[in-house]
Image (cartoon, rainbow, N blue to C red):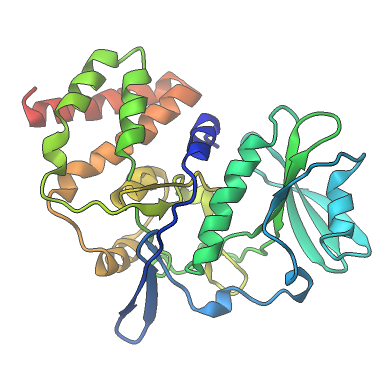
Length: 314
């Protein structure tokens, strides 16, 4: 959905430090990977897939063939027959198909106008979240170039259920101050107000502890679902490492209910001044949407900027 945003996040590579802590709730067990801030699900949300067991982490295609997607599925994917392919929803900019085989199903996205770097970034984000074993995400298998131009990504196919699952279980966490500064000063139509806010926002972040967390980065309703067993699933990430609070930036179009926030704050309590900072994270995404989709988002962005300038007295 956010083209430039995802390309920018390719620069934020996977961090080397990982630590986990276990939190015991009333009647439920929740494991929190503190470097990412994703509430855990039990291991049953990662069902064994024998046909995938020996696969290596995702790789970028080096050789070119007439049909690299089918070639990979019939070799590294351990399939001997592709029984059916069908078009399915793939977002705003990509085409997507489901490949059914005798070794299981695969989800494939293609883009005829963009090279593999965008899908490499998506695969890195998916792979980082998958390795935490905290919430189910599609496992990426292969990224490569198409012989006629463009690129593709092959990943695990997840059969979605009828609902978005238990929001309390899927509570997540996150930040993005560096990216926010870049976005604010790059909006040529509102540069002066944005620069004033950037120069004076430090008081909003006083007396808090910021620990880098792995963030999904684009957590809106279209990227949240559940599998057929009702376990939460998140997909189509724009991952980076940042402050846990920033994951709330897309809450204006995520549709989270009270159970989500209650479960989240049980694991990651609010830090001082959170309510004053909350709109900052929304502002980043309003500016991003303004940049990508046009002027309908300008008034919302300017309203937030003006409110902060008034609050800060600048």
